[in-house]
Amino acid sequence: MEQQVYNGPIPLQLDPQKSSASYVIGADIGGTNLRLALADMSGRIMGTWSTSTAGVREPQSVVELIRHGVDSLLCQASLTHTALCAIAAGAPGVTNSELGIVIATSYLMGWRNVPLRDLLEADFGLPAAVDNDVNMAAIGEHRAGAAQGVSDFVFLAVGTGVGAGIMINGKLLHGTAWTAGEIGYMLVPGAPEAPVERGTPGAIESLVGGEGIKKVWQGRWSEERTPVSKEATATEIFDAALAGDALAKQVLQLSSRTLAYVIYNISLILNCPLFVLGGSVGLHPALGNAARAELEQRRARVQPELVCSGLGSDAQLIGAIHLAIDTAKAHRFVA
Image 1 (cartoon, rainbow, N blue to C red):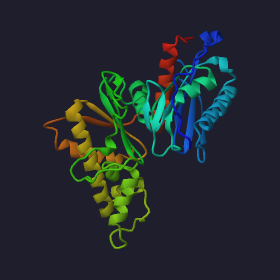
Image 2 (cartoon, rainbow, N blue to C red; image 1 turned 45 degrees about the vertical axis):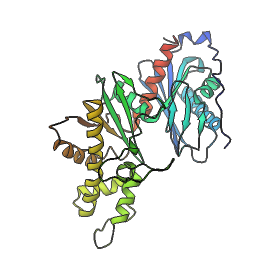
Image 3 (tube, rainbow, N blue to C red; image 1 turned 180 degrees about the vertical axis):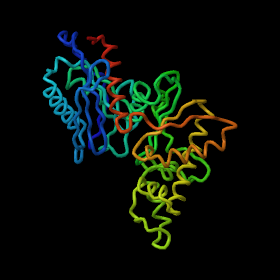
Image 4 (cartoon, rainbow, N blue to C red; image 1 turned 135 degrees about the vertical axis):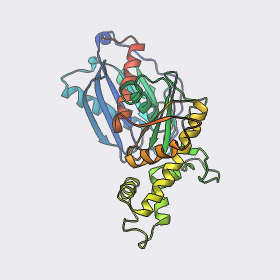
């Protein structure tokens, strides 16, 4: 794909008819799926829409998919485009939220320096906002999930990989190079120490991420040791651990201990009282319970609370809705 170069903001022409607009669009762009939600200014969801992004690579093609989904949502709600006042999208990659540029992502269509905010604003004629998907989930948990009323917390996304959305004093911590929260590359006892090449899983991801857990399992698996399939997924391995399978319990212990080390170290540095565990693997109760047991042994120094996501798989989408609401208010698009 030809690299897209950012050449400055595309002038946004605000439609005076939209001064009475009262709905927003939240978008969760994934490597395999695109999800959208239409919501009012209170965050109440009026409708959702999803489609596959398999085979879709060009950023403009993704924007066209979003446009198609928005048209469908508006039709279902008997609304026109003049009812919309903002749109926000989360993308799984390093994202400059200030300029709305997806800097890099290892598995989302090979995007590099994609000016996604400008593309959305040019297509929809609306104020737009863009951020990393894990940061979006942190926003969602802060506004409507397990971290409501908490100004300092960390959202831990454990899925295929591992990442964090860090909220300090009620604001996201992005970092100088927009890579704050890339905890998958932390080094802790027991994790691989070899330098990691760009685009490859980090040390923590190799033990806690879904693909890493599967590889650990396959490296230890034998027919004599377990009846569970060699091709079991991370959540299936955790299910087997809860059912008493000895090998699965070993793998769970390794993953949970590594996760507990990560939480412990972050807690020492940031002094956050709350960690919210989400993601397809992180939501499995076995991982959270085992990590809490590990942390309990170290409570003399830090006492972070570890809770499950209150929004589950909808955290990113709900976060996008609330970022869109903030964006609308910032541009004075209020009902």
